[in-house]
Image 1 (cartoon, rainbow, N blue to C red):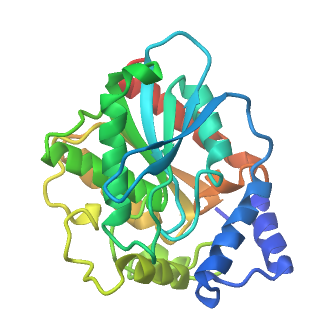
Image 2 (image 1 turned 180 degrees about the horizontal axis):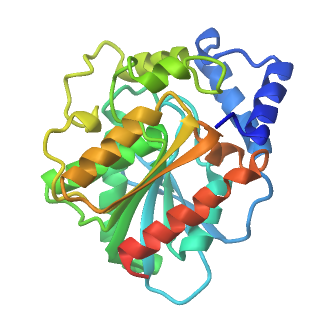
Image 3 (image 1 turned 30 degrees about the horizontal axis):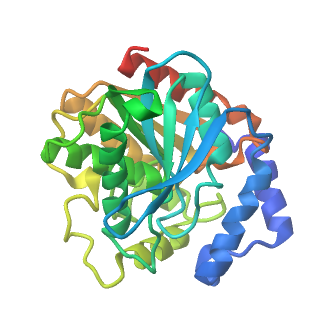
Length: 309
């Protein structure tokens, strides 16, 4: 279908504002630009929020814990924000996480993992895995149930969630009940049809993804680590049930959908949803694109079904 009118309105507003593509920005400029998305997210829903730090492999990791109303113990979700492993922070996803927690009834631990280029791979992955282990070990103190633990994230955060789910299986780490993947990066491949069709003009551009990957990898080879490209893992059996969301006008659409298909073929319970007419990671723009609000309910429903709450 055509670009949704709300999404087109957003594209027009960004063009009028003269926002340059990320490859034309310095990293500090890109991070400042990401903060501008906060104004596109609408009002923050009320929920109990606690900010704290937890131990990590490279020092303390800031986290933000969201606890919805209702009796516990509740399901527990470890959430990783998007931003190409270079931009984004706890504030960027504060409003979406509030909605997800309220609708799912789960405690969310949002993780401020280390960013590139200051910290190249595997720093973000190591922090994400460590935060998941911490959440599992400390679930009771959070009013949550470690037996109903999930990982979730958007874009680069979806990549981290998928990678953590694989590592938890491989390392016999925390038993995960679900993985919620919004517009996930799953491969290092710029040749898919969605990369060709949506190379420019639709918010996230191919050049921006090349820029993000370059900062995240540094001098490393993309083939050097099995958790760098979760879509290339040969054996996907034994992974937790997955909700995989993609957007029609997104360069990452095809790799997300391919990953969902491969998970299903491996016997994983998968709910895959493509949001037609929408742009990459519209979780960041739900105030400007309210037609996409259904993604929050869809993800919450999939999470509740997986954790049986």
